[in-house]
Image (cartoon, rainbow, N blue to C red; front, side, top):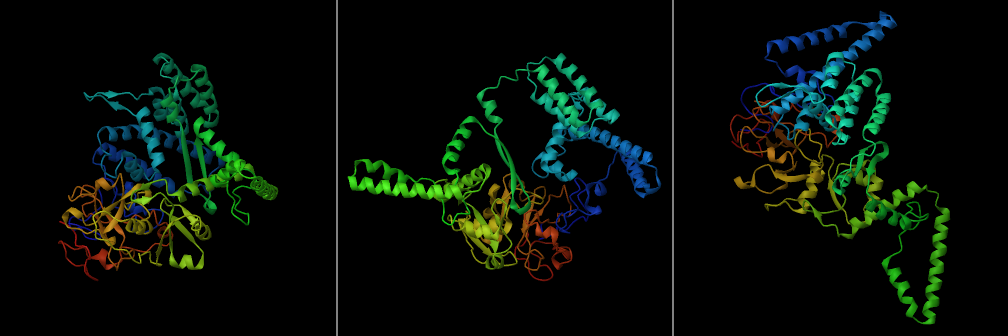
Amino acid sequence: MLSGDRISGVAGVAADTGFGGDSGSSGGSCASAESTPSSVLEIEDVDLAHAIATIEDQVSMLRRLDTIGASNSDRRALLVRAETLQHALFALSHTWIADLIAQHGLDHIYGSVPDTLAILLRLSRRRASQRIRHAEQYGQRSAITGERLDPILTTTAAAAAAEGTLDEEHQHIITNFFRTLSPDIDPETRHHAEQQLTELARQLGPDNFKVAARRLFDTLDPDGTNEDEQQIAERCYFRIKDQGQHGLSKGTFLIDAETRAYLEAAFATWAKPGMCNPAATTPDSAPSTDSIRHDSGSSSGSTGGSSEVRSTDSSTDSSTDDRARRDRRSQGRRQHDALKTIVRQMLASGDLGSHRGLPVTAVITMTLSDLETATGHAVTATGSLIRMRDAIRMASHAHHYLAIFDDHGRSLHLGRTKRIATADQRIVLIAADRGCTFPDCTRPATWSQVHHIDEWATGGNTDIDTLTYGCDMHHPLIGPDDTDWATTKTGPGHPYPRRTLGHPPTTLDPTRKGHINHYHHPNEYIYPTPEDSTPEHATPPTQPGTPRRGGPDPHPPPT
């Protein structure tokens, strides 16, 4: 049975994954020493336990030594030898990860294998995926009969583990080398190439090694792979990186010829000097279809009509020239402003359909106090921050949904009792949850679906207080059994009222302690509120429906 925060039973932490450290209990950006996986995970194998304990003891000894009195030569030697050890341990971890994957030791814990590895090792998901790719190439494998097989890139793996001279960058370069090398290259040539690359990696730093590897690649595969249309299309992408200072975002893209032709045609008109200039006193626009129809129909009109049209065209040309002369933006800035205008008008047209129950448009949420003072930031459904003055200006361009919350983040209105959440309820959830509420999940609201805390099939209502967001990966993990994940809502007396708690299965945490996902509310990292000090955390109920001290449980836990 679930409480809002804990489940009665064996006290303890997740002995299987290190989940026991509550990612939301402190609200800080760094976990305490007690919550890191290495401090809670035990190793039963005597030899493995002794080996890792020895390393930990020696690291602890180094931590107690002060190098201020050491000579510079000793400090240099210490730094180099310690780095070599790190390289060797990193190389050994490839086999450990490969064995975990092969024996399903990372399945069905946090959704995907990369997600699980990222949380266990405190990595970004991108870095965890990279570690998995390294494990596939450099980790030892097992045959169906149980026989141990060498890594795919045997020479590189041996040099990395035995010598510690190859760091992660070297291995990444070699991995990419063979990933892009033509399959027509025969195995013997590939083997000699790996040997040469390994020797070069021993001698060169990553910057120089990258150049050498590129030259060897061009020598072996000068014509490249004969790719079909589908393979070429798979290489195209458009990526926007995380927001930086002032809300600015960098991005990279690789587009095909068709997309380039569309952009060039649009920029030819919309990115001309004077067009789409946000500094202009009057809004700029591209030539409208009405003006085109007007021009095409003028040829059959009377002489007076033609004279009137020519007069209008002359006035328009003069106005356009004036705007162009006043425009001091660079070409890159004009193209940026043109793209913004094009996308904004597409969203405002209402012709883009719907996404997860809402029209395709910009959904922006803000607190009432921020709106009244025109300060702070608004948050979009995708998790981006927008300065308040920009959000207010955006509201004048298109039909945006606006959900206003009080300073505590609670919805002011909107309750429903239908099975499918309404558009109004989805808007409130966007403002309240901002994304998937599964512990530590980073997926925004636009990647999530509405989840009933109290399942509809067992009598639950579709009310805003019993709805939350779960992404497509984590939503299927929620179920009625002890081996499934479960969700509850915090009560009104909780430091984070009406927030969703994710309870791990008993296989991960026998106590099934609830965790709040603070990722979509980063202010809670900066200004944390202790959660375990509240009555609701102090006394978990032992039976379904048992009230907590400090007030009744508004959502009795299921059995």
